Amino acid sequence: GIHNLFLSETDLWLFDLGQPHLESTPGFLTKFLFSFFHTLGMEETTSEDGQDITWVKRFISNEKTQKLELTPETKDLLSKSYTAFETVLDSFVAELFDQDDTVRETLVLYVTLQLLSDASFCLERWSIKGGGRSRNTNHQKGIEKWLWRALWDIYVAFDLNTEPNLQRLKCCC
Image (tube, rainbow, N blue to C red):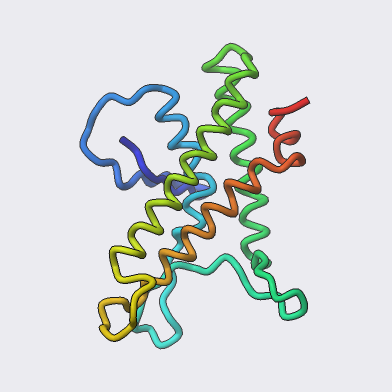
């Protein structure tokens, strides 16, 4: 089934499709909706020296609070992702589910679970590649990207379920 997609103003890319098979409508919709947020945590960039490709870090350290916060670019992209997500969610509820708003909450919960599941996958990859062990070997080069990606998925799963966002998505009172 579909795992990820990227959208631009003019194109749509589907990737990590896996073996062709029939997928339930809720399963497909969950993967589709999940991609609006998940793919931001997978954006790649080249290191300054041009030697390595790594994922874009979506967080910076705040010197005053000693906490992580979203980069300005990420704040802008996340806002646009919410707008796109909301538009598609509204269309799905209207066109596929006959305005049944109870489906809206279920889809948001499924997206949340999918984000948390991917975070778990990322932590497992980090561990398999030597994360948390002595750095005596070079096979661990670049594995911190899995932690950044897990952090992103966890952050978005939480953010999606904050009261302002649930109200925006018409998922609560």
